[in-house]
Length: 374
Ligand SMILES: Cc1cc2nc3c(=O)[nH]c(=O)nc-3n(C[C@H](O)[C@H](O)[C@H](O)COP(=O)(O)O)c2cc1C
Image (cartoon, rainbow, N blue to C red; front, top):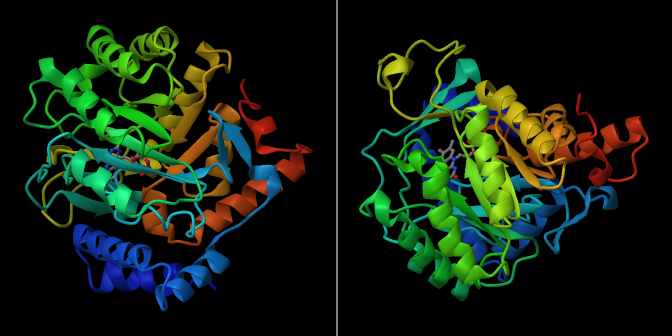
């Protein structure tokens, strides 16, 4: 029986109406404590118990990507562990990789609270966190203190709010220089709706300046990806694909949250009483699912499957994950689905993916990538 879905979630979401950000902070603090004390009891015991219950291994799910070994294709999306406080526990929770950040060059508090809301009628979340994080120096120190991870770790970089848009490249570069030895892959996040003007950096000229600076420094050593918004027009996505070729990016992450509000069941945000349309922020979860899959399919077609895609947006089930992989994603990530479905979600999805492989007579997850293009 899944205790999270039958007891924990109703208690937290409905009975106690727990504030989502506080709940997130507390859960992360607990996981951070487990991580810091992982070699001693009781954390040692708790972690091995979690691993036993939550993880799912099957050689058919393993994959070499960017010369990294992914034990399975399901990762934790950026934004959950911005400061890397639990960097060492995500593999124990069953994830095949985890993306830390978004981290910025300067530490920053983010937007005023409340800034994270659940929309249960839509199995969605609305957030306008605004890159609250302790900064790239602090992340480096934490990763230095607590090294040793068994799966790939991505680091997602954003622009500090105090840095003018014209100086964005130097801001991203500064964080990359601090962190390059500590991440297995790096993501240029130009798609959060919650930093003023950030998404304008997806524009070809502005993005070129950032990628030029980063690849100049990186020289292709670490895989570098760009994370895009689901709200870009097809032409703008094609421009990013062109840049990916020019700057030899390792891939594209599709997608971040959407600022669109169409098709939601929720009229108002319960916590504020305001209409959803009037609350600033990005929507994640189910309402994002089909658009992000369409973006993945488009990129896969544009690149003839030559550019790896990380698929993210609205994954709640193995079917959802499969759809993104079959549309062209090499690996996928979850955030909102994990909140709604709980920690057993990872195992359920991975077991479901293996069943899908068997049903289709495929030998490995890599055979499934882009296998259902129209
Ligand atoms: C509360 C919250 C905070 C997020 N913070 C970040 C972030 O800092 N950087 C980022 O690239 N994406 C961030 N995201 C976006 C997720 O990484 C993901 O792209 C998006 O939520 C879609 O996936 P999902 O539907 O599985 O949540 C955040 C999402 C949520 C819900």
